[in-house]
Image 1 (tube, helix red, strand yellow):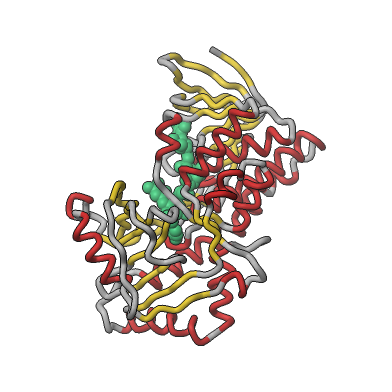
Image 2: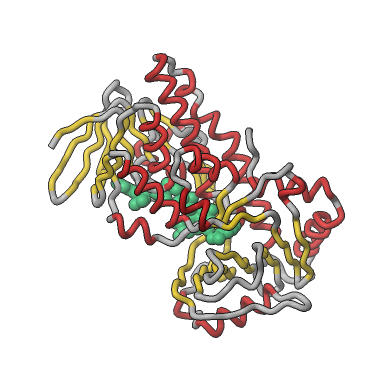
Length: 392
Ligand code: FAS
Ligand code: PHB
């Protein structure tokens, strides 16, 4: 079947779903092609930290009813180094900006429901196979759905299809530079039915390795452990997970509550990006163009930040036949992407075990940690990057 729309969106993750809602709000038709089922994308456990900008956008889109009810607004974060814990009061240091803890799968559920309620077409289990004509005025996405081949012709293609999608593959190699760090460690992430042992997140360096205490609700905790890249969840029975977390997160006068773990997965840590996110009528957004190590809690938030620029650029083109924002799209996004890459890399090197305990490199880590405690300027730097800069 051949059909058409104004903007063809590949991917129903945070990027694709927010783009569709912003376009619909401005009267621009679009269709989302998503290769997984609705159930799959709504149950995929990933991020959990929403920056102020992201919460503001979801509210602006009128899709924040559950988020406002169930999201956990945080005003500070704990940083720990070998059992010494300090708190960074980011609300106080940033003039009131906060983060909200709310699982990415909940965000995706809310955004999908909002898209469907507003009549936006999302084709689930529709696998985009290739894109043609991006240097013409009507590119096409060729996709497979219900065992049949289809063609979606559009004015623009939005590659919101993540790190493993086809969007980035469509960019000619000589149109961008690629930057990459593959870190020598991964994260074992768990979800457990146990009340959080801390009211705010705890990022901890320990000589045995990094650990992060996050949460999802008053009864569900989300925690992470630094593991080797070749480690597997089979090596981590619940008892061992809780014992290791308790050691790495421990501090005087505090104890970690344990409980039944119902989700366990290992995610590699990488920094990745390209310095051009467009080719003709194809525009990339989110993980399709960049990956940050989750230590800064930036992945989902960067995806949404790209979309703000892309939606404005497309609106400007349809409303005023002005392509200036489309031309500057990549450069506009890259300012925030570089900032998020730097902060995520800083937090990753600060909190992960990479050098022998007591080595010069390790003592430099400790010096960075101590500096946050004694310097309001450095604490403010951490705070404003963590909650996300309002403008950049
Ligand atoms: P997404 O990957 O979310 O969405 C892309 C969508 O495109 C997917 O639904 C995919 O099925 C679809 N797609 C791909 N190819 C397609 C094709 N050919 N045709 C049709 N559809 C196609 N970030 C954090 O901040 N904190 C975390 O703790 C964290 N943990 C993560 C754990 C894992 C395992 C992963 C993979 C990522 C994690 N992230 C984390 C990053 C994550 O939250 C991303 O930044 C966020 O999902 C980016 O959103 P999108 O750009 O929309 O990409
Ligand atoms: C999470 O709650 O999943 C989370 C929070 C902060 C991070 C990474 C993940 O930096």
